[in-house]
Length: 130
Image 1 (spheres, one colour):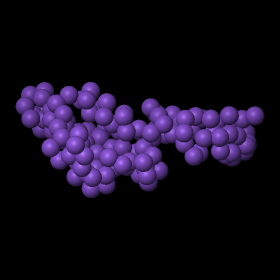
Image 2 (cartoon, rainbow, N blue to C red):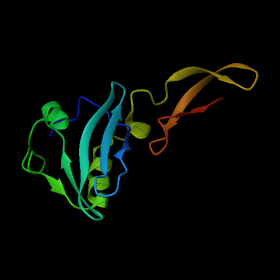
Image 3 (cartoon, rainbow, N blue to C red):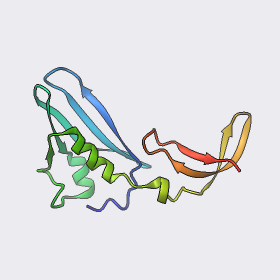
């Protein structure tokens, strides 16, 4: 699956329905273009979820031997593992790393350098001020 043209920096879980017996959860991959609905989970019986790759993801990246319209997971940890494997390492290889930026901090504008990217947060840049 060729996701090389898109650099995903995080994924996010959205609970669509919390109603017992009808829980629905969506997982979105996030990049600079926005977010892509990648996995949908639905409750099939009490406390048993089934997770499938969405048509949105397959339309964007196509089918492979391992990820296709038949791909299903029964454990959230497997979904999380797959989504995490798709997260690029922008904090190590991003075109924005080492980029000069202007940032408002405390009492004024400062020139800094991007040194890291918070993958597990909300996409915040970490900036060093020399």
